[in-house]
Image (cartoon, rainbow, N blue to C red; front, side, top):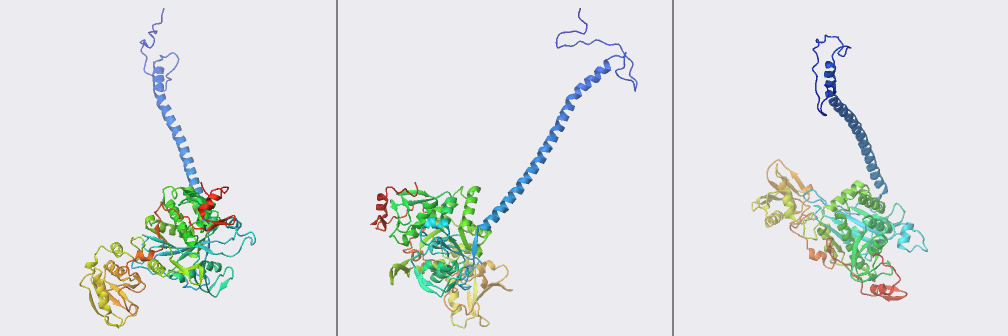
Length: 578
């Protein structure tokens, strides 16, 4: 027989149980002899509650685990931040420790480097003398440059085989890099290098020789030659070129023919190559391989190299790659000697930021125009045309047609004020005692587009200094007028009245642009005159190739030949770069 409680699988049958009295409080629900219904109900409640308790328990366990994970993550993140901050601080201090700095005017007089003049907006350009030393002052430099077999490692600074004036405009819209050939004969002023004790009373000689008396002497010599104020200098040696080129992964450069310079040891096949390490140094040092075999050909090749390096700096991936930035920063700071004004990573970064604002198309490379030295056919002097190039740089005028610190009134005026010049009237007063000065300057303002309501008169008394006084809320108008006249911000004063009043002082006795000031509106840069015979090019010209010399400028096995002939003859000599 089957038990009445049995039923088909999966189905349960219930048997009615006899009634039982309601359990009184305190009685055990499972007391012996009682019906099992209460126990069944309790068991059912327990079963139904179990999953909820299990879920709540699991949630609590997960929460505890999550809390532990969060605590661990927080601690790990804190440690990471501390380590990162510590590494950043270490890196910053490491780079600062790499730098070597010396004074800009050490032993040459406080005014030996010149002084920049601010434009009408208070901005000043930056001029930096970049020097490449040929000194064999370390074992690595001796190995790279040679010439130490008899002398060994040398002391002193050597000569400045590379000299370039880097000019960054006051408005950071353009830049000029002017090379000065090392063979240029000029006057070296009296100098003393406090670090070595060497001194000179001054002499006529090659411009690069001044570095023997310290970087400050080289700065003073270049300022004397060009009239360009020098704000900073950067000096790089042989090993520095190698380190810098390696740090950026090599620099692309092109030669228009096979070349083998038996002096610098540069050997390249016609075409484009990526120059790293020693190959980069051989390229920038080669003078017999390019042009006419003089230092002029070398400067042209250096411009191609530097243009390519600038393009690489600005390209995506170079300055956004932390490893690349570290290599570059470490190599640069180890390789450089700078003036004390640039003697920190923060200042160098600021300079790099200023230069990075300038598009490659607005960076002009040029070589100082030269003429043969009448006293030495192997040397050159600055040609008369060079004076135009010097003045253009000193006056902060662009060579690319872009707005410069003092060269484009329209752009600067738009920056300073939305008020057109035609709506600006100026009262011009003569404080010089020279008849007609107010009329001349007022006429120039009207010719430059200012309001015909501009008037003239005599100042209440004599004035030693020219001032432009403006009323409340009229500073922008005054800046526009100052820009047109070449007045710096130091000549502007706020008055209590209204309108603009220009008082011409005895510091401005002739002309319609303030002497030595911006004066851009009346004297735009003559770029053709400034760059005539200067072999100028801009940094965005990626297809330029160095012109291999067609003259017999090298010698192989005692036989004079062209660099291309030497390339063909030197079968066993490995190329500097693939």
